[in-house]
Length: 113
Length: 112
Image (cartoon, rainbow over all chains, first blue to last red; front, side):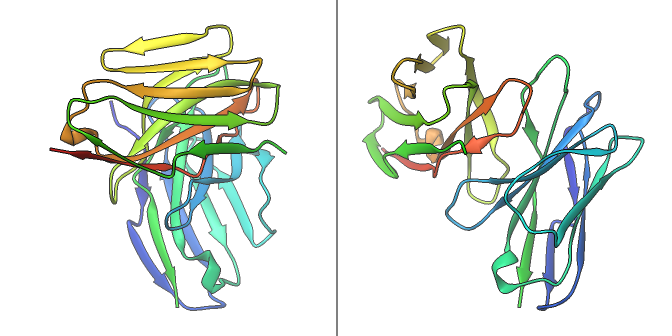
C-alpha cells in the first residue's frame, strides 16, 4: 500500500520565479491538503482539494494556487516567489467521507534565493 | 479563527520517566485532535488521535486526554525511550473541515 509521495524532494529557486510541487495521495484517498512548514514552526494550512475543486483555503495570497487531477494527485503552484516562501511544503491525504486521519508525505524543501 | 497553543516548547526528561505536553484550543466547534511526531528531516507521523466524544485514549505507552469544557488536551508518554526524542505537534480541526490547525511544537529530548 503506497503512502503519500511528493516530488521533488528539494528545490532551489530565485526571487520572482515560479514553482510547481507535486503530490500523490495514499492509495484509496480522495482529498489532498497542502501545508507550509517554516523552520521551527508547525505546519500552516494552505488549501485543500476534493473532487478537483478547492474545498477550503487558509490565509495565503493568490500567488499560491493548486490543482487536483482525476486520479486525485495534486499540484501546488507558487508564483512570484519571495524569500519568505522558503519552507518545507507538506502534502497530506485523507478521505472526505467518512472523515479520516490526514497522512503526510515527506515534503518538498524549497529554498528561495 | 482557530488558534492552538502548545506548551512547553522544549522538554527534557530522563529515560524511563514520563513526559506530558499540553495544548489548548480556541474554537469550541473543534472535535478532532491528532498528535504528530516529526523527527529531524522527516514527515510528521500520526502517533495518536482523539475525537470529542471520548475523554481519553491509550495506545501502549502513549495516551491522550481531552477536556472539552476547558478546551485543552494533553499527550502523555510513559517509560520514555531515546527513540521518543523528536518534535511533537498537537492539532485541532472541526467536523467536515479537515483543516488542521497546529500548535507550535514541543522538542522532546530523552536523556539516557
